[in-house]
Length: 128
Image 1 (cartoon, rainbow, N blue to C red):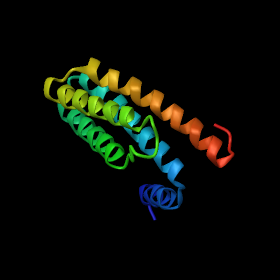
Image 2: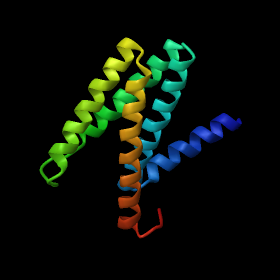
Image 3: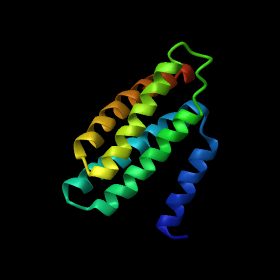
Image 4: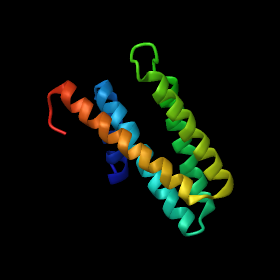
């Protein structure tokens, strides 16, 4: 098996066996990674790579929004509104090539990721 095939299998197995809280953090990790690469691509005038990464980031935000049950947590509607804002910023960033918008979304994504990581650690009893 090649190194890439082994890596793909490891990632696949990690996702398949991860508890829900960890999956959420993994989504945020990927969102932040996509935004970092998109920002770098925009800085380097590589609109193709930037567009691909921004589009993937949009898909992640849409999935986060679709799976959010706003009825079980008083902060749910606010988080749903934030996801809508982030999605709009990503669409505008992709259309205009605006790196500042990508960086704004990245900042929010990093804060959310860190908060969910801490919450997941508290739920599972593991350290952050």
